[in-house]
Image 1: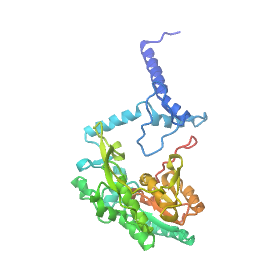
Image 2: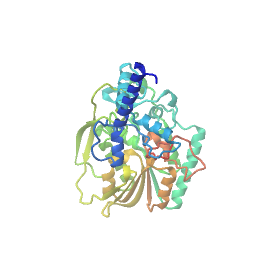
Image 3: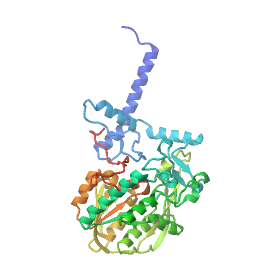
Image 4: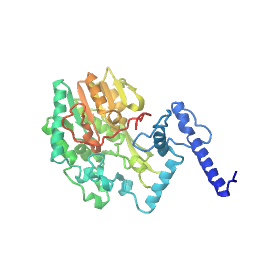
Length: 403
């Protein structure tokens, strides 16, 4: 037998060490999976739960079959050792060389999502395109959207169900003064938000114009985060107040508003920042005390939440098909509606949402959808004949059998 050369020994040693290192580093994932995410990870297990991506990562396959290599490759690409650390270091390097295509750094520590060159005209998730008018529906898509929403209106009207649409706006048009001048000049007064508002008005579908409201009241406090796409608690308060006023109930004014400091949000997390820490502002209103707060039963990952309150001021049963903007409003919903079911849109298929609508006894359907994902109020399962094709946001947990 030939003796191993020194280079072979070194090579095999590196492979062995890296394999052992990789195995140990997955200990936290394996442990969390077997213990429902609870408890401390085993010794020498690197923290792999730092997940700032707006998607579900590939799961560790447990079934040995022909698809195992492909599934394990997807899992490994999402979970290899030091992945989060390497990504952060990569973004820091890009910042140093002034290469940050995902984020626009504004004035006074404001950060906004940018559009990549290949998504300048993307129909969904395109915040800069919304601001510059590049997401306006063309004649074909506009006609399809009008027919689709007319179909939805007829479906609900035939069943005596009220439909209300509310759209939390993007931050760019509200706080454009904090954009760099080169971007600020590209803003348009008539974008897709205004186009959809006109379409729904012509169809006699109730629409809550939150953009106009926030433009009038934004001096009352911090309505949206500087480094996150979501509204602050104060912004959520006024947004929800516009909804309840539409339904005949005026939300009480806050007793006080407390300014709190918290870590920066989703825009900062994908930016190529070199700072070790970042802080944002959250203005938190305190509502008058009530003895009838109601209660909510929350499903896994808040996919479905059911709130009940027999003493609520709004005596309606509502079904709210929503996005993450409503995550700060659970207590508000519980104290306001007699019964409210909240469905997180991106955690359901369109067919699942339609089945929930058919099974519901709600007298009012509320579509809450952020401006950048505005077209996701479409439901092909309900009205399949006319649809504007988009890549829908999918945040459902991936199963082992999924590609």
